[in-house]
Image: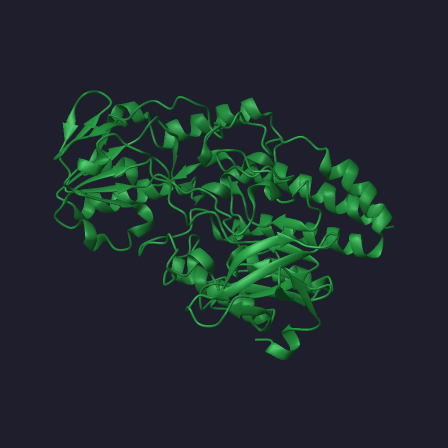
Length: 464
């Protein structure tokens, strides 16, 4: 870690408190997968970087020892190895197609060590406030997460927020929930299948986490109900002997129209998985690619064996039971709400990210603040493939933009006015993705990477 003497320099003042000027250094918030690649790419573009991490190690959500980690004991990747790894740091050849979460953490730790990132990370340090300062700079106030020491404020040339968006649980306000006598937990609190053993379990949520927990409940619980709001397309992890995302990418390389790709993949799923209605599940009310992909090879198997009973959405909770949308009731001992997460940036004023009343940031490419050219967010994405390659190129674009601002301010201003500030919001996918919080940041990896490449090329042209 950088020494205190190296970290602090000339003292400024703000509201009667000292502010330590870090010059042209960039602040990165978080040392998870997005924060690590941001530090690495900013360093490669010549920037000094201070990264603040509230935990004592790297890895973010993939480090299940961290308080905010949503990872449970049996979690594996749902995107295969080639589509998950950073482009310049491959995962080991002898690892499986879908690595375990402990392997992913090991990979991130190796990445940090390989690129010598740890000296630029302040562990056990939480960012409590990020405020605009003079010109385009930012005052960042931090404190120890251990409760020791006073708050300190440093001034930075730019800020890259990489605090993740899968750590603040979203739990719907169900009628009667407060009176329910059974145990209710959010999936973020679920860690081990032993918690399910011998219990009557109701799992709420049709996403990948909800499906995984329902499968574990089928093996451990005395009864398992799985409640979903709609029907979904359930993709197996392997199609024709290959990981499903690799099969999908092979189809993309054919450059077929979206409707033809949707028909082809829906046909493939019907041949490999079958009609969900045959298993008592609802027919999907949307086409493939219009919701975040569900990748699970065991859910249909467990439904077919009676281990999971599909049920509709929740109507209300009663004292000892849960009433479903069709009027039937179930009596669970334990309810696991796999109902997703909401992005939280409590250290930033909502207007900095042009956030809506619902808390949805409005950012160019889900990364660049249109109001503040020196503020960016890394990793605020949900993709039909792995996210790490996308965040790699996203942070390359961020670093090159900041470098252009320093090298050619006038050209940078012209670029910003035309390419970022006035660009309308758009979804980086050609499918009609559902307009729900779960899909706020949904992108097609091909469309999104093309948009990033276009921006990177434009930045190079502007600098030239």
